[in-house]
Length: 183
Ligand code: AMP
Image 1 (tube, rainbow, N blue to C red):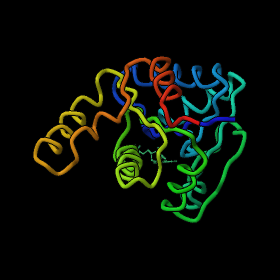
Image 2: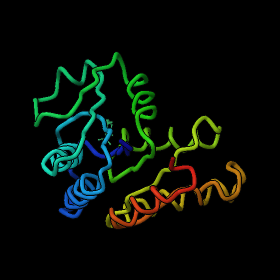
Image 3: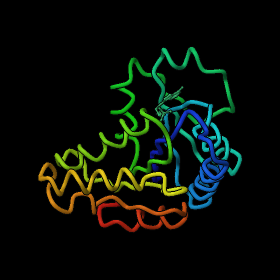
């Protein structure tokens, strides 16, 4: 089974559209037969996304560091949960298990994870496709920042163009699964 790793908030954000987008992405993954790899938590966007995939008969693999696992209140059963030693192992596992990556609205953890995917692609350590689910234009300032970084000469021209971006889960998943390196 092909899998997409989704990075998203452990909080829900201030707009109902964010949780709605997590729900829509969850349905899109399950209905397209794509497994979900995610951080294994059950709060906020992560909880809504994973429970929606499970409720729609999809596959969910959670990868969570031991310390966080002990703190989480148990949520709906997942297909698999990998408890790992630390956050570095978790990011490596999530990248390994997935065939592509999506970041949704989230906080520092989400940005850390997405930047690692982006930077490792720049370093040619992986060639898997990735994209941003741009609910309520959440990522427009990030795209501006990346353009600024390119413009100022700290990032090769056109690297930002490798990021798929769409407001609609269905369209974004289509873009990722049609990417030339989606195997
Ligand atoms: P944040 O965007 O700061 O809320 O962090 C969310 C991202 O970091 C997710 O994609 C997870 O992989 C990871 N993460 C942060 N907090 C948790 C948590 N309480 N449980 C599981 N994963 C978490």
